[in-house]
Length: 188
Image 1 (cartoon, rainbow, N blue to C red):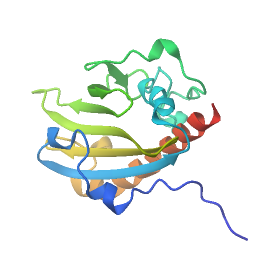
Image 2 (cartoon, rainbow, N blue to C red; image 1 turned 45 degrees about the horizontal axis):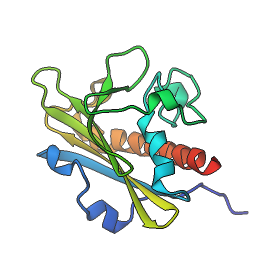
Image 3 (tube, rainbow, N blue to C red; image 1 turned 30 degrees about the vertical axis):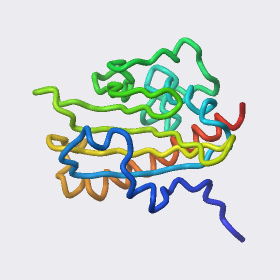
Image 4 (cartoon, one colour; image 1 turned 90 degrees about the vertical axis):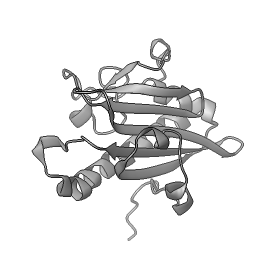
């Protein structure tokens, strides 16, 4: 009996090695993770799902009991959440000040989120969502999270733990999110 694990969210070697929008904004980088998924829809149909992300918005399309206050992530595009500009906030989890700020928006191509240091406003994390269209009607969603100086792992974990435990946990959450976006975009 073969066990189906779901769609691959592994980035190709070329995708992991290639520079992505936002990479140059966070230097030096102390950690990075790249994931990707193929979505059988044109990028113009995938883009709206990215714009409405955020806790208390449409959700993160991942494990809602962790990052969306147990509220189910949206199953439809919500028109009133499509107006996103540089500086817009996409809350990380409900009821906290933990938030991602929109650093860059290139319609139907890339959305770059960031976390800035509360002390001196330098970038600590970037999270780039990049849409490529390798053939008509097919989108490759490539996501890269980068961590810079001053980032403190959650729950007071030491940095060595971030490189393994946090990266592992992020990989699980990121794969769920990518599959959730793909499922929703393809269902339309």
